[in-house]
Image (cartoon, rainbow, N blue to C red):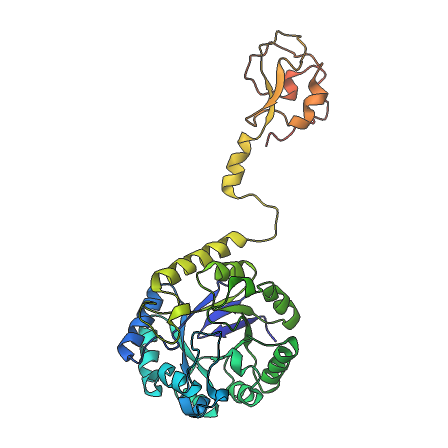
Length: 362
């Protein structure tokens, strides 16, 4: 598999800027006008793409309120049935063409997460440029095979996955025809504590799987996302909302536009700061070398006078001989009178070396 994928002409992988995805999820609150607005706000905040989810309550589960289908403690959806939650959160399929056009007008790519064969079939009619597999569907191998068969790039989220499950999912996608595949480190908690992010897995997964690796981030704030970028994450996905005060199924762990923009700016700064593993000087560093220490005459000396610690010292700036030469010059005579503040060079000293060891003052 390649360590680089391409979505709608945008290359994603090592050496390319992180691909930042705004996940709309349920934050449209069943209003297409709000969905359109969110897409524009995501573009303004610096996103590269927006993502929706394509399902209905009936493609996800059944309408049943026994304990198996009621969400237990430990989440923001405690006590709700799955069917009720998915009914509130679903993005109406009939919006899809409109949202694709809206995203295109904003300069963004839109793609979706399918959850069953019917949603894949529908999204194929919409010309999806890529597909996302949600963490909870990591083990749905028939779905993975159906998505791989489209030939589109796939982004696989790995929350809750064991190493064996992740390997099986990757193998399933590859064997079924997926050529361009990226995986996302994910902690499937909503919101997720930063201490559970385990970002060290990002470079480890990249090395082991030989695939582009990113982060699907459910933590609050942008610190974890920026840290992930520094560790090599080539995709960052964050839930996006107009305002957390507008309550919805995902609003509590979603980013507001100004927060998202700040995150993108910090990601871009982090990328610039990573640089390359080379010992090289920036132009500003090169200019600063003059302020290093070097050997100077610190008191007037008559012709033939000796260089001593009282008249010859290592100080800033760097116009004189390198400090390592100090033991070699002390006790030697100067060939002419030298004034205080003169940078010392070999041509001022008797017995100048025939093959000068005159040092780079920087």
